Length: 313
Image 1 (cartoon, rainbow, N blue to C red):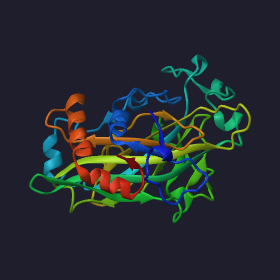
Image 2 (cartoon, rainbow, N blue to C red):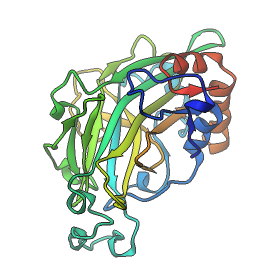
Image 3 (cartoon, rainbow, N blue to C red):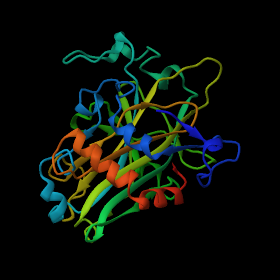
Image 4 (cartoon, one colour):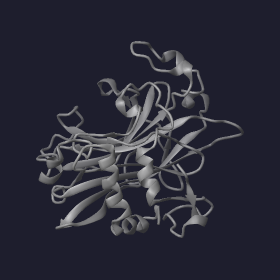
């Protein structure tokens, strides 16, 4: 994905060091990001999300468009999330069904946490936006969650999980708080870092809900010389039940809105994004057209994201 820097746009993301070359996205890039090919596959994962962006049951990728219009019954809570993986980009580390990948631990291409112990991934500004109808044929964008990773115990917003999430196995993560804001962490050796935002109730807003947009900023820090750790990051969101069953427990408690494109984390700041839109027909073309209508043609998208410093018109 092409990156535009400050000399190409006048909007400046807030709370960033003046010495950092900050990136911004233009509107077409937001759409292209969801429909472009993944940049790499996450190590050890056999899930569909490792191959391409996905749209879950309650999105434009489903024929259940009535679910969007009728308020999802009890599915009125939502949570934004991200997942950081070691890249599976060499043949020795290709995951195969029924075959252990433990022999990959010492390969620098799929265990950056071991081979590059001083290199970490800096995560910052995880955000969730919704697109909804406030009156007949009048749609607006709103930011409903912002995660600055400051006001929480680190173990409340993320853990290491086994790469394929089998049996929900996880353990505490070695999270560092960074002076510029945000956190840094690592992944590899059979573990991904799965992180999330607040549980947001949108019961008063989900009737007429038409779209969701997720964005998170990331970069690699601590690189020396020609070191080249390979990390992949994607973001997405889930719906949760509003009847008190908020702890994870397969589809009984949460449904995936979808998972965005896996992209490499680089030494330069990059935005990692996901969106889903209600479309009359559950096809990629229909979803893209719905995205154009909401992002390109609706001025409130530019307004709300310009306000938070991440969109360049």
